[in-house]
Length: 170
Image (cartoon, rainbow, N blue to C red; front, top):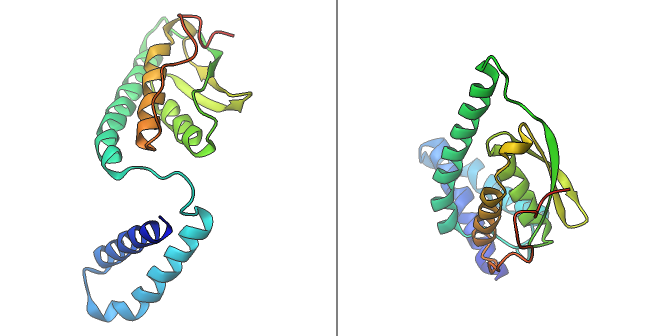
C-alpha cells in the first residue's frame, strides 16, 4: 500500500514538473531532486496509511462541486440584491456518519461551498453549520454531500442513523 501511494505521488509530482517546464530535459537537473523532495514531504505530511481520495470519484465529483459552488454564489447574490433581503441566519448541528478527521475536513470544505452555508467546525460528532437562511436549510442535500464525500474516500456508505426531518435541529 505504501509503495503504491509513493509511486502515485511520485508520478503525479513528476507530471506536474514536466508540465511546468514544458518537458525541457535540462530542467531535470533541478526537477528530479525537487520531485523527490516534494514526494518525501507529501508522505511526511500525509502518510500513505491515512485514508486517500479515490481519483476516479474525484474526477466525477469535482464538476458537481463546481456547479454547486456556482449555484451557491448565485443564491447569495440573489439574497443580497433582493430588496427584502431574505436572510434568517442561524446555526444547525448536523450529526456525522463518521469520525474520520480527513473525511470530515473535506466535508466541511464542501459544506462551505453549498448555497448559504459555512462549516464552522466539528463538536461531539456533529458538524456545526452556519447558514444564511435557517428556514431554507436543506438537510437532505447536506446528507447527500456527506455520502458523496464518504464515497470519495472509498468508505462504506451506510444508512444514516438519524431518522426524520429533525436531524440537524438544535
